Amino acid sequence: MTEINVAFDAADQYELLMGRWSRAVGRRFLDWLAPQPGLDWLDVGCGTGAFTQLIAAECKPKSMTGADPAPAQIEYALAWFYIQQLQHTFTVLKYEVVFVVV
Image (cartoon, rainbow, N blue to C red):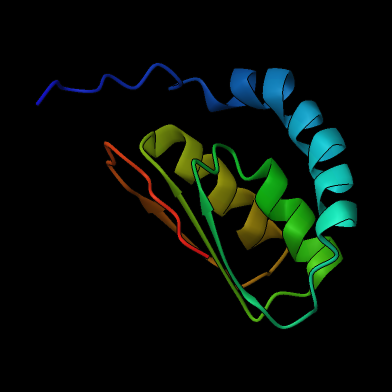
């Protein structure tokens, strides 16, 4: 299997570029989805946690797990959630394929 090289080690720069878009599009997606509060969430490819932050603020999740293959992204997300004193799990997850069945 081919090795995947992570290209997003500069989390602060990634946040400047992608964070605002994740929040803008994410808000519209959550409005469309209209999830009930108290759900368990998994954000695969969470990056710096911009969309994860939006879920935490808008959806009142029971639990929230963010996963990303880039350790720098996870550290950035963890720092924000720590400062906000929110209890959510973030993990570095090396994945090749993501398949979702709902």
